[in-house]
Length: 415
Image (cartoon, rainbow, N blue to C red; front, top):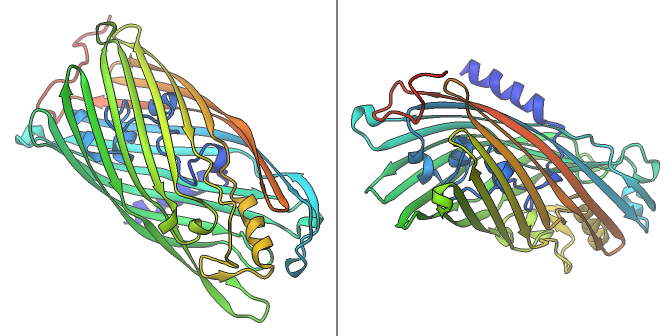
């Protein structure tokens, strides 16, 4: 337990400054920063090419990973966020200003391990991951007119899952997530950094349709946080803040029938149910996400990847409430619109690319990826926000034959 605690602390320290709206869908990443999926725009719900994507996406696909495998991945996201506030919010001391967010880019780690149990004649693969789930934020403390406006949200997860082959074609899986989240803001002069814990469940299935085509689907529950005493009013009264990650429903299809099986095409569709999530339902609409990825095997050892993702802009343009997450906003609807400007997940188009090298060393694979998100601008009454970003990352994966009932596709000798 002590070792796990230390690992979580180190993980949080490496990622806390993460301004994950670099490429989130709403506030969540959906495998866009994983080793191989990162080069395929996150498409991974039926045939993931890295173990972290199986652990964090559709757990039924864990059965595709044999032997013992361990992967250490990390990425760097560098967003550019601008805000233009044209009117005052007198009750919180915000005056008109225009500025670029001062929060720098930062590291995004994703670590996972899988073990298949076929040595015990069990058609099961289990997986464990320490992964970055979500984040949003911006910081304008250097602008006096902003009155110290700053918002940061980060979600780190420990995920345990298992996949089972029920037949030669059908696999099912389930995963349990224990999430830790850190929230600083977004209410000017009212909040400080607080932490909370929550649980989340995922179930999934994957089916081989034949003709080198497979179909996967998953359902992910809400992840409900209660940030205790997150808001402190001027009179000294403390208020809890309710904050939910939304339910997610996803379906993915993959096909490798082209070019003698060397070309893998994948597409995922995800529906994010924001309207049932505390806090986010006040600023986001429900959202559709479309992820398209391709992987071409140049040789048995070299793979090239590309991807494109499109999502609906989830920002609500019809807010009619004066509270969010159970917290009353001092300046009412204008203040809510100001919060939207800080949590503006507005970009809709992303392109990615990557490369994978198998057996760079015996049993050691290397994956690299990069991506960019085109600039988009949106207006929330008197608040205008713009966002663009790029990101890079990679991973090293170790594959071991021990404990596997079947040999991995690793040559017995290397020249």
